[in-house]
Length: 221
Image (tube, rainbow, N blue to C red; front, side):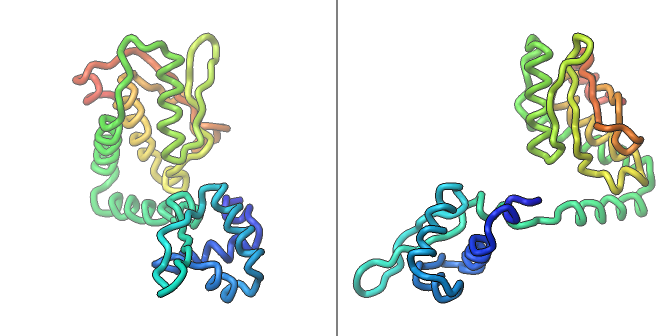
């Protein structure tokens, strides 16, 4: 269930009204749109402000006493679905159709390297635990629902959500993006130990040896 769906129906309606209000909404306008009392609107606004979904903005000129306006924060905008997965899958499918398997794999690997190199690199002397937790956080921010775990005295990363799942079932080479990204972001060799697409419970990655810049250009699974 999305965070938006976890809110009450009135708060969802209030947020949608603010989404459509370019200049923000007032208590008066929200009362008229939602057909609830001023006191109820203020209570809902207070709750949504506490969750950082709504913020009070500059008062709207009224020719008299200033009227407070409310608008969505970045967190509030983030509550509404943004179906990037469908668009990304369509783009990757078109890439496969136009370029072929080998060229698509190379492009995804290069994209992973490019994005990974934009991440702050850990120190070569950083312990594996620190590198694993740092890398898991980066993957988590991309939607992989990742966590660092210790298994058999070594640190691994487990990802519970395959962001390319639908496409990876048809074209497993898209996993090259994950590996290239992780190796460039961590500076370590990364081994793909388990894969959701191939029937695994998670996508599991084991950290390996340090990579030089030249090694990263040639890194493989």
